[in-house]
Length: 239
Image (tube, rainbow, N blue to C red; front, side, top):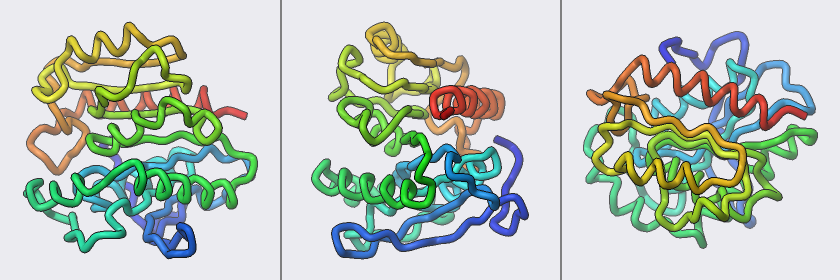
């Protein structure tokens, strides 16, 4: 994930947009290949704790440069959350994250998926996310097969999800040194899955190992997990 993709990259379009959510506008960030096709694979990227910050916008643009249309809905749109750009204080965002619930997140995710599908009617679609976004994605691995065709998560795992009930192919990446997600828990989840999956634990990697703006960044694990995930999504989102 070392290549930076700027908003003015000729291969893509990238911009903030407004998505209709039950008659109210919701801010979102959209990035897609410049030459969009009716069957371009799509990704709803569930934002991480810091919202739609520079890291998440860059990730959406990376997806676009690799042939995916991606949208990041602002799950904090109902709140007066601070701007996450350049922020390293996660405590400032915890009250807003704790204010999220299935009753609010579900409509936001559904609105983003519908918005993408209206633009790419022949698409297959994944939900993806890092950290908090990974948890959001994981929680939609059961019962959302009518909306999503794959789940991709980085260092996000929910105790609410029984792996035996997961009904969508899942690709996930974890760090062996992540104190918040023990290896044994990841291994138990992986062994309980009954769907196609690619779940990998990276040695010497901790939480947020894909985020190049943070001390936990582990470039080898970040790049390998990105390439694995792209390959997994291409297989499961192929028409």
